[in-house]
Length: 606
Image (cartoon, rainbow, N blue to C red):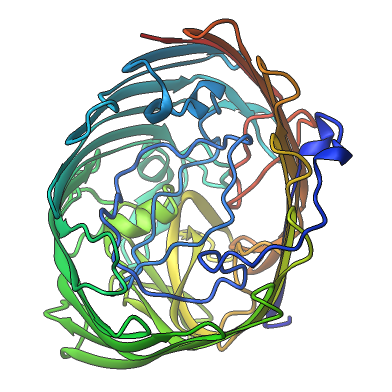
C-alpha cells in the first residue's frame, strides 16, 4: 500500500453563472498587484486581535469569498463544524456596518426541517464608540442516509451570542470581545458495533457493545473573552506602533471534559526612516483540561501546558523589494505529555520582488509552524473525536493499534514557499506557488475500534474517532486566477495540489485527493443578488478497522445556489438551495451529510 496521498484543491468562483459579463465595464489598463494579498499562501506570522476559537457554526455561504490569507504565530485550529453543516442564510451577507439602520433580525425555515434566527445590533454611526451585539440559533432536524442503507436522525442545534466593543479616542484604541457558543449534535455515523456483543477495550478490559453505542450525543459549550489595546497612527511607516491583548476562554462538553485557556501578548513596530523597521511579536497561550465524568468507555487524563512564541525580525520595504529576516523562538513549558520542556527555534525569512511597475511580484519564504493539540482544539478540528482524546499507536508485535493518551503538539520545522503573482489587467490577477512542509506529529483521525472478546478476528468500529500522529513531508502546488468582470461580479479560480509522504502511516487518512469548486456571485439588478457554488471533492482514503486496511471514500459533487431580493430598504427575502445533486458528502468515515435541502427566509432592518 502506498504511503503517498495526493490531493488537489481547486476553487473557482464564477459570477457569470448568474449574470452576463459586461464587456464595456472591463478596462485593459494594468494595475499594480495588491501587495496585501498573497496567493501563494506564504506564511506571515501576525497577531490577530482576537483568536475566536469558540464553536460558532461556520456558515457555508456561497455569496461570500475571500482571497486573502490570515495566520497566527501559534496556530490554533478554528472550529470545523460537523457535517451536516449549518445551512447558509443569505441575510448573513447584510453589511450591518454600512447600513443606516442599527439593527437587523432575520429568520428562515428549511426543508429538513430546519429553523434559523439571528438578531444583530450595531451602533455603526458613532465615531468614538463601536458596539455590536449578536445572538442567534439554528436547528437542523433532518435525517441522513447511511452508506450501507437506512436513514438515521442527524439533529444539530447551534446557539451563539456575542458582544464586540471598540473605543477610538485620539491616538489610542481599545476594545473587547465576548463570544458564547453552544453546539449540540449526535454521533450518527455508520458503525459496525453490535450492542449485544462483548468487546476487548483498548486497555485490555472488556466493554459491551451497548457501552459504546450509548455514547450517541454530544454538546460543546464555550465562552471566550478578549481585550486589546493599541495606538492608532496615521502613518505607521514613520511612527512607533504597539498592540497588546489578553484573554481567556472556558470550554466544556456533555461528557464532563472541560478546558480553560489564558492567552496574552502583543507586538511592537519600530520604523527606520520609512524604508525599514525592527519588530517583535510575543504570544503566550496556556491551557488546562478538566477530567470528564467517570465512564467505562473513556480514559481521561489531565493535560496542561504553556506555549510561548517570541518572534523578532528586521524588515525593509522598498519600491522594488520587501525583505523580512527573523526568528520564531518557541518554548513549550509544563506540558504533561512531554518528558521535558522543549525549546524550538525556527527561521522566519521572506523576500518579495516587484517587477514591471509593480504588475508582477515574485516571493519566497522559509519559516516554521506550531499547532497546539489540546482537547478543545482537537474537538474543534473533528467534532466526532472521542471525548477523552484517545490516541492510537500501532503495535508491530500485536499487529494492531493500542491506546495511549499523550497527544503531542504538532510542528513543522521547515515551511518553504516560492511563488509569483501578476496583474494582467484591471480586472484580472493570477498567481502560482510551490510549497514544501516538513510535518512533525501531524494529527490524523481513525475510528475507535474493538476486537470481539470471543473471536479476535471480529473487529467492530465505533462512530467516535481516535487520533493518530505521524511525521512526514508535504509538497504543494497552488494557483489562483481572480477576475472581476464587472463591478458587481467576481470570478475566483484556485488550485492546490498536495502530495503527502508519511513516515509510518499507509495514507494521510481522511485528507481529500481532489477538490474542485466553481462558484460566484453577482448583482444583476439593484434589488437582486445571486450566488452559486459547485464543488467536487475527490476520493480520499480512510482506515477501515474491520478490514485492517485503507478504504476509499468516493468523491462527491456538491451544488449550491442562492439569492437575495431586496424588497425595500428594510426588508430582504432570501433563498438557498444546497446539495442539489443530493450527493453523499463524507468528510469522515461513516458520516454522510444532508442531501438536497433548501432554506427560505426574511431579513428586517430597523
